[in-house]
Amino acid sequence: MSIATVIAIAIVVLVIITIFKTARIVPQKTAFIIERLGKYATTLDAGFHILIPFLDKVAYKHSLKEVAVDVPAQTCIMNANPHR
Image 1 (cartoon, rainbow, N blue to C red):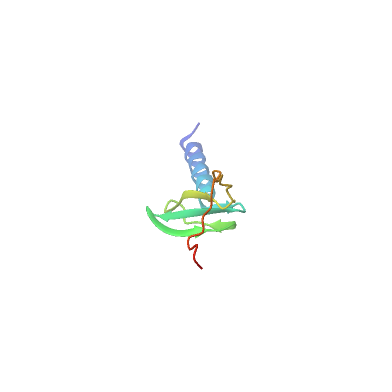
Image 2 (image 1 turned 120 degrees about the vertical axis):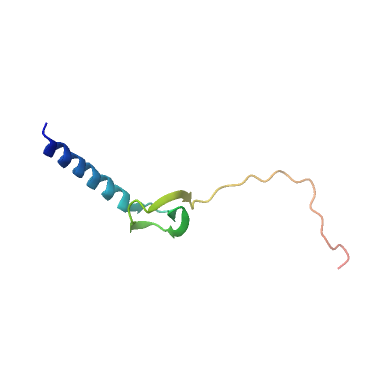
């Protein structure tokens, strides 16, 4: 392979990586926390978003779905003010 072919392949790979780092699709019931240079920048809601490649990164993916919580059985519930 010639030097020109290797350079062309490297440029194509760099362009593909840049495109994947730029375009983000956030699914429904999810929020992405974005950091710019290691500092909180914004929160992305559901939909298509464009980021600044190599500066912005997805720091955390937060699910907005409801979570069921089990409550232990209670033996007695007392009124706080019995003399009303």
